[in-house]
Length: 151
Image (cartoon, rainbow, N blue to C red; front, side):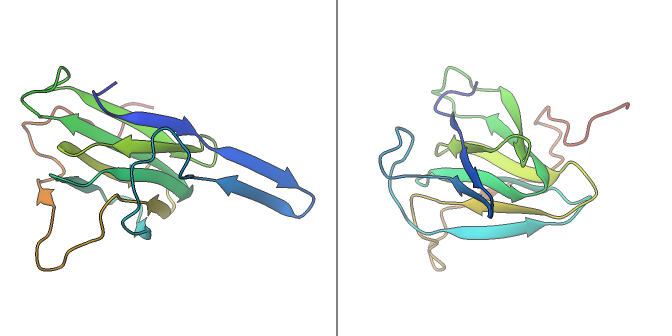
């Protein structure tokens, strides 16, 4: 596990009408603070990566479909510097992942369907002073496979 990354199994509460899924509560151990809430869609075959933040903590889960969340730690002062991690998120694995500042992350659908990802970042988006760094999703300096090889 990358230093500072935390996960929480999400709770599904079913009844005869459907289900409710609790995602994040202000009394959760991994909750820091609320900045905004947004949903982003990612089409099959697309990789939305790599990006990281200097101040912001991201709280990411998959609401629809199945996604691979990739993480890369290049924080020089981190005990897990140079390591990658991968999580499969979605209906069959309802999980929220806390991504600390400085950890590069991104996601891609693992099937032929659009995924909807929910993020509850600790900071709201500053259009004039963006807390966001970007790298190519296939940066050769990051040893990470977005799509599995073989079958």
